[in-house]
Length: 254
Length: 303
Image 1 (cartoon, each protein chain N blue to C red):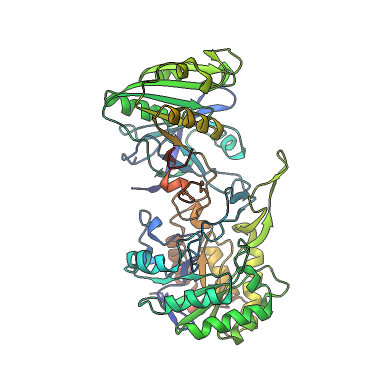
Image 2 (tube, chains in turn purple, green):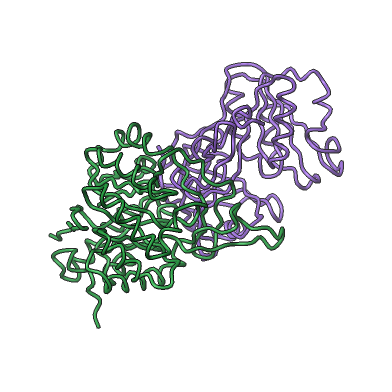
């Protein structure tokens, strides 16, 4: 069930100047959360940041009643969320949106870029619990833009690409040598910038592999009331916050 | 005990707080957060004769203390509303008020005629103020003769309470209010959004696919409040006031300025439970300030 709830800021884990993990602790934690779900976080203290910020749920711990978010500080809201103090109240609406489908067996590929890696910790864990063999392919501009690979390595094989070649293979994720191989995956999951996800969806389509993408559209309400976050599809506009954020890329016509 | 009941034209509401059209879906979106039946009314998402896909993404931009939207009346059409949506929400213990839109006067009439046959709908809100459609919408609401013409036409097709939603994008909103009053409106609701725009300086592109959109949120509240006060003094029919209401105190200000009922809009996006907080807050205010009936607040600004 969706809830609007106050949490206390428990801790920050600073990954570098721009990237951090925000952990909140509540008196209660909704446990019915799935890989791909997101929360709408209210940003305290700035009149110019009026709307909540939709952020993927990175992880949660039912025992400690904590929920955490991987945040890239790229705008006023995400920067302000990185400047709060321990114990500050943070109000969130959660859990929102649909989730990735988790098969019972098989072999899958996860392709993430930029801040679009956040949902893959929960997804990797869920896949491992089902006995699915998972490969993570994470891309960034430089090695300083690659995060969470330690977490991912607990759930599968981790491959990296960087545009400057400072870590892993040089180039974009879609140029990774993996795509030149047999590609015997049952499904590909992707999250990140639209051009990357579209390119991944194209490669998946060419090989007849099912592909699920998680979209990051601008949102206001996050609960399907305002219809601001739509994405076009052959079947008409889709509401990303409720019909998504995860879509089979065929539904989007990618 | 505070009596929260209030009369908007011929419509009896159990309390003065409604959810504004376009910000509350059809009510079911909020069921996890509270019982939508607690509201005085739900002004449901704008309805047109046929299915509309709305405008292209991006159709929203955040602004200081507010937001611009250019959704463009995305909806599945009046028949879908009557056959599929209304049956699923009519059990709410509140007034479901459809927001009626059209590109032509005939569109408005046809939608109204269909709704007029539906049992359980006691009022409609005639939207002549949507700024985000190419044809119709606000065009009807910014000139007095066309506002009068569409109100007269819909009046003939509608037997129950007729609320006309006014655009603030006019030189003199009282002139339009008086016009629709004369054309048979039972109440007016105001304000719809203010026409605005936003540009991304880095890309030098407009932030909305439509360039312009409707501004809402606390940024517009002082202007909306002034317009409600002006209209209250210009017409005899009741006013449903809205524009940037974020809490009970804002809602009380609108009632003191002359609003018989209020509508909560953009605030629903920030706090999905805001409406019930406003209802409870109005009740507490009445108790504290010695008002036995919430209707005694209407136009009670001193001086």
